[in-house]
Length: 171
Image (cartoon, rainbow, N blue to C red):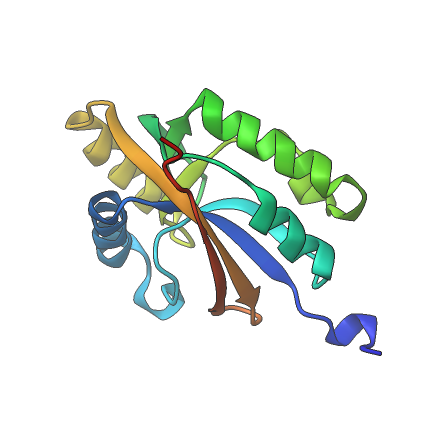
């Protein structure tokens, strides 16, 4: 049996359509400090899911069609900048997953879900305010598509890909 401190921590992210993923990746590569940018842009659904058969069973059982989400604005993170997302379907998906993992969630994952993609972090407040202002000047709300979920193994900084759970059209 694995000791608790040796157990795997999983992070669950929402998969975006490739064009949107490329857009956010480019911004992250441009604005994230190079020495800290070892991840692609991502929308985190849960920061810590357990290494159990239950986790995989829940994720395999999700029957969800791809859906559109609105990117409605930018959020100042203090030391960074993120794009804010709004979607009733995303909120319902998150609530269903939260209910399925209710007894296993850490405090961070029990908080109000405010979906976003961070494109800058770990910079000075002045640098983040400068980027926020620059991005807001040309910002117009736009639509991105959710196409699945991805499970990652947290490795103390970098993540390793574990499994994907694509959303499927059910026509």
